Length: 116
Figure 1: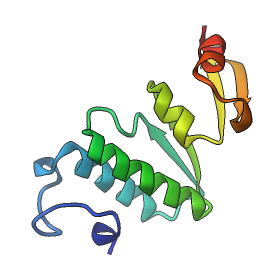
Figure 2: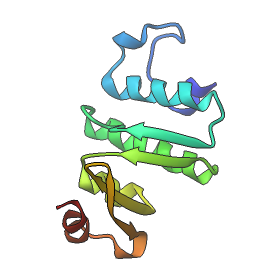
Figure 3: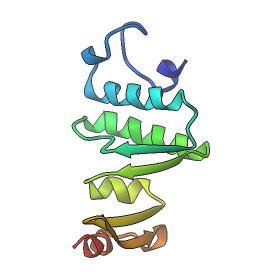
Figure 4: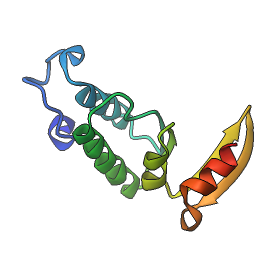
């Protein structure tokens, strides 16, 4: 059961999602997406508005998903999140690719340069 695997903290499996914490709500969204057995998972600000503990759980979950062969396409405004979770970063501004960084060239400075 995904609820147990993703450590979703709810009283029962039928407990309303809107009554869960922000981190658990995010995990429910990811769980629903995983039920479709995706090859690619698009994540838009996956940890916005959740506490540090829930972020760590989501990061661990995303790493496990990637290790299972699912490609993760993540949009995030948090540079440390991008730098720690990504294997490659592509920056886009006004609809155009402004740069690409492979993992071995990651730094906040390099990323900020491509974003400017």
